[in-house]
Length: 191
Image 1 (cartoon, rainbow, N blue to C red):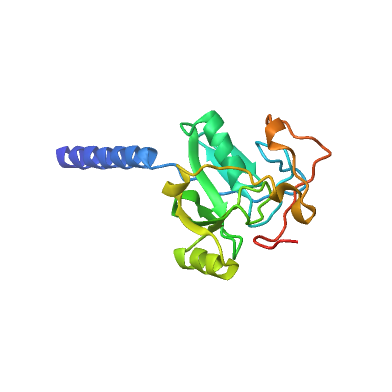
Image 2 (image 1 turned 90 degrees about the vertical axis):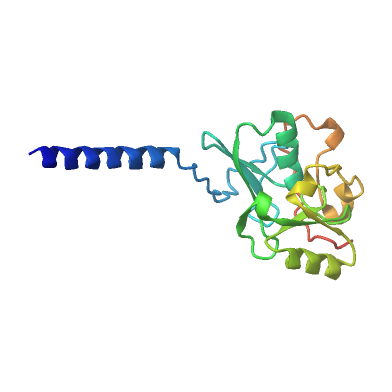
C-alpha cells in the first residue's frame, strides 16, 4: 500500500510538472489569411490585397493587424511600440508565403514600386533577395536588424507613377479615405 501511494505521488508530481511546462511553452502565433473584402491597413485604412506586399503582426492577445505595405507596419510599430507584439509576418515576394519578419531578407530601393511607395520587398532567402536586386539592376540587401535603423521614407515620385493612387503621406493621420485606392504595381518598373 505504501508503495502504491508513493507511485501515485510520483505520477501526480510528474503530471503537474508536465502541466506547468506546457503552460510555460511559448505561445505560437500564425499569420492569418488576407480577406480582400474586409481587410484594411491598420495605418492607412486602404484595402489590403492578398499579394506579396501584405504584412501583418499578431498582438500578444491574438489580434491580427494587417498592412498593405511593410512601411505601414513599421509606422504602426513606431506609433504603438512593440511591447504588445507577439509576432510579425511578411510575405515572400516570389511565392507569397508568410514568413517571420525577423527571418526574411529584404531588397530596398526608393524606385521599387510597393503599395505605399516605401520600396522594401521581402524574400525568404538571401539568395532570392540578391537575385531580385541583380535583376532590377539596383537596390540594397537588408536584414530585419537593418530595417530597425532604416529611414522609412515614402518616395513621393512613386506615389503618382504608373497610375498608382496613394494618399498624401503628409496628410496621413491613420484615417484613410474611402475614395483612395491602393496601387499594387509591379516593382522596379517605371511607366
